[in-house]
Image (cartoon, rainbow, N blue to C red; front, side, top):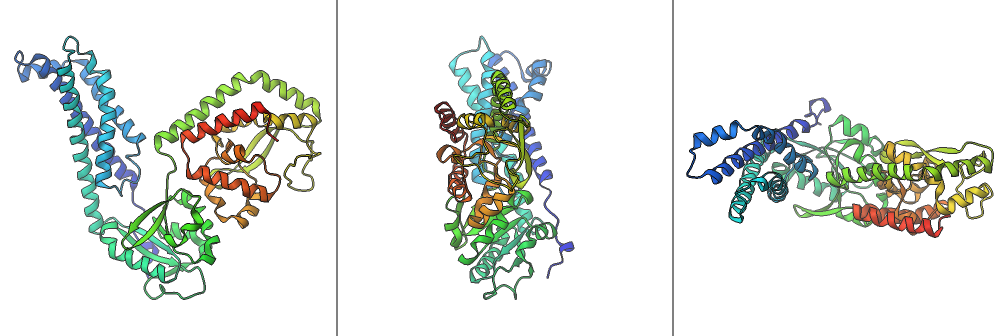
Length: 485
């Protein structure tokens, strides 16, 4: 058995990311140097020699401005298109495709900022030569340097200097096949199985060839103790409910999860990919739901719209606050603990729509003719005015404009017993509105919460900025029609 303290610690991905950054910086600076010389050469060809052109370039303050600005343009594009994610496992072909696309965007931006000012040399042949020459050089420089680093990484994997500690969850015959397949391909993948977790009491085919580490309840401790990078889940149909224990900790520990295709039917509503692995297919649970640029844009839109809404609706907010205060004794703003992204609790803000001590007998969902709701509260709920203070939650970062509605731990515990993969929604920030809210509305009991859950899982499977805009528009329509409840 391999002792935990003798294992290799987690790969220092930050160092490898820094290498990618430095190489991209070098390629962008060399590319700018080429562009500067090439432009001047085309402008003054036959008039000035190389030495004179060099003096002209290095004595120009704009050249040094470009040395600072141009790399940041390229690095920004590279970062937004996820070049610095999963730095140890990159496909050469995919990197080539991404490099071409990234350089196309970067060169086009720089072309319109810099080259179009080259008057009076503004003619199509000059522009054509400059653009495509700079484009070709940028691709060649960037990809060659990246390829050298990818080759170095691949050699490190082949020499076992770079390994990815792997855990298998399951102990049936298919689990043994997974182990043998990983072992066979470890020369190329770098995966090293450190042990497995026994799930059921059936035949255990792994105990003689790989250590049994512990039980599933200790999954978090195992990941930390053995520096786990990859997890393969191989379960029997009777054990599908146990998968939520693993999925709920995926983001917390930043591990890659692969589910053998035999269990794919329980994840038909999740965002998954199917890849061939040797002669066995598996499903990869994606680590990132949105690309970097989409995540940044989504957060920017959240802050902008929330801030704008609070400013524009400030007279309405004051009016609602006065009405709440007059409607019944109690605070204007009601706050309640909800469970947010990664299972982290936060306080959600709402205009109080119920009488105080409405849950004196314990947690209870609101229903259509709920006598706990004040008369003004019924009006607010109809137009969803009670949720306007949640724009503050969005600005704080606890919530997003669009995302699954946050629930209380009390109800989550009940939902998970019925639908274990509810925990998949904890990958997302909760939202003011959601696909479940639009298509189903408020839930009055746990069964209805489960029904609404499927719409939110559908959103998880198809998450995009476009779907967010669609949900926001439909929510606005519902508000104006007064179809809330």
